[in-house]
Image (tube, rainbow, N blue to C red; front, side):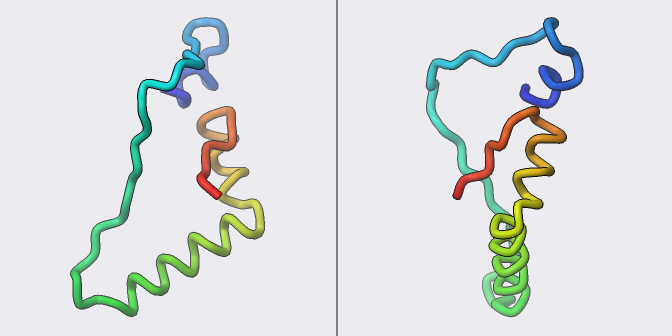
Length: 67
């Protein structure tokens, strides 16, 4: 929803009420620990250097990345 509100201001709005949260994940094979470690490292680096927040702001108009 945030994508559309950022692209069409005034046409949509995001409610402030909390209707619950959703967590997202990346699926990998259980035994692919190297890939999982590399994904986690990349995600941690993106959070640390602000690039995850920049992507979130670009697409959703707000930083929605969990710290």
